[in-house]
Image (cartoon, rainbow, N blue to C red):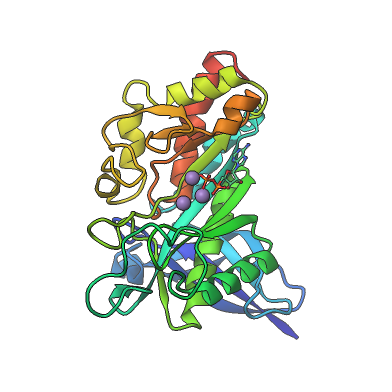
Length: 339
Ligand code: ADP
Ligand code: MN
Ligand code: MN
Ligand code: MN
C-alpha cells in the first residue's frame, strides 16, 4: 500500500515569493525522502542547470486528503548542498540556535482578503460597499463574506495540527484574520506557511481566491498586516525586559532594516492612517494601536508578557520577521543582562 506526501516549498518569485507544491507517492512506512524540482519554472534557476533539491523539515497530517497522507514543508537547496538564496529558513535556523537559551515565542496574526474575480468578496459589481465600521467581528449576511471558507480552513488547520489560536472577521468586507502561536521561531513560521497553503487550497474548493496583498482595496479601506507578537522567557517575567525589547527595535538603523524586510509594499500600508504608524517613524506605546510597537494594556498591568510589532505586512515572510526580531531584541536583552 502507499500514502501521498504533498511537498510544499517557497519559490523565488520577487518581490513576494509564492507557495508551490507537488505530490509524491510513497510506500507505506517509507520515510520522507529528499526530492527535486525544476527551478527554472519557479524563478529558482536558469534553464541549463535547473535541478533544485527539496529537503523535508516539518510534516503534518493532510486534512484534505485524510488517511495517512501528509503535508510536508521543505527547504530548498542547491545540488552542492548549500541553501538556495531563496531559502530564508536556513539563516533563521542559525539565529534561532544562537539565541535558543532566551526561549523566544511568537504569535503571528495573519490578515488576508478573499477575492472573487477582480473584486474583494462582498464588494458589489458597481461602486463600493458601505464604509468600514460594522464588518470587524461582525455577524450577518450583510456584513460577512466567506464564513464557510473560513470555518473550513480553521477545521483543516486543527486537523493538520497547526498551532492556530483564533480567527476573526476584519475591518474590510471579505477580509479575515487567523492567529498562529505562541510557538518557537521555526515552528511558528513553518506552521504559518502551511496554514497559508491550506488557506489557498481550501478556498480553491469554494471557487474563491485568498490574497495576502497588503493593500487589496485602494482608498479608505484598511490594509492587511501580520502583527507579530513576541516574547522571551525574561519578557514573560519582567517589565524591564519588555521595555528593553521595545526600545531596541527603535535604535540606530534598526527601524529601517526591519521595515525593508517586512513585506513588499509596506510603505503603502503604513501611512499613519487606518491604525498604523508611519513607516519612517518608529514609536512604541502601551495600548497604542497607532504605534509601530504596542505593549498590550494587560502586559502593563501584569508587568510582564509580550510586545506586538504592528508593522509587518500580510505578505511578510515569517522566517525573515522572526529572524530579525530574535536577532535585534535578543542581542539587546543579552547586552542589558536581561536574559
Ligand atoms: P490583537 O488584540 O492584536 O488583535 P490577537 O488576539 O489577534 O491580538 O493576537 C495576539 C497574539 O499574541 C496571538 O497569536 C497569541 O498567540 C500571541 N501571544 C500571546 N501571548 C504571547 C507571548 N507571551 N509571546 C508571544 N506571543 C504571544
Ligand atoms: Mn488580531
Ligand atoms: Mn487584525
Ligand atoms: Mn494585533
